[in-house]
Image: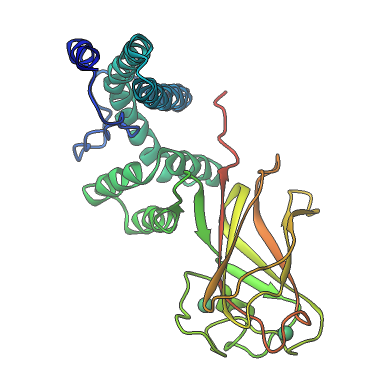
Length: 327
Ligand SMILES: [Ca+2]
Ligand SMILES: [Ca+2]
């Protein structure tokens, strides 16, 4: 074992995993022209998207190889451990080499996005918004910095700020899915309005205590059978996960559906709601369908659990649906 360790040390075997996360792009200086060396052209974003994907894939592979090397070491298979570790280090070197290029390109793409967000044309703005979301929260911060140091009409400034704030409401879960809170809602019935209305299921959770609270949606009748809550979100994603914050008599959800572009409903999940904690979360995951959507519908069988079955908030998570290809 001692000699085995010596070989490993000589081979530069370092314990500990490979950091998956890449270094973040450097902050952008506050001017609105493109950084030196970046040629403005359509397709920069697509190139960057591919480079980032490739980089993430290699970083993940390197991390897996390091893990495999440690497993081989645990089995005292020193040669295999060294070989596997070498492969991991080679991949890591490739990842690091791509960082500088990614950083340079990101800087240019962010300036392009900022330019497009200022546009009057809605289509151009939407494309820029989708791209910004795809680049992640650090990019949003950089665009916010550009806005701060820019000299724009107050109208344009307000419009760009609104987009940034909307994106800022997006949260990313541990598997990289984008999570949003509902911006609009309607229901088969409501106990009241505005209290206990469907709108009470919009936004982040704000009902922190179990019980019959007016900050959650409640149906008109307590136990009248099937009832539904329909929620809309800011950005279209391919649905992969839904989290429902149940705050009174949980356990009555029976179905979750998503609406496609032709307004047809597709079942994402059907089953038994085992939520017993109150407040509690019904957290369901499923394979994403091929379409993107901003609208989901939750069906309850209110007869299943006696009393009002109240829902405070619904987080909708998914993969970004439309990353437009350039011409
Ligand atoms: Ca009930
Ligand atoms: Ca609420």
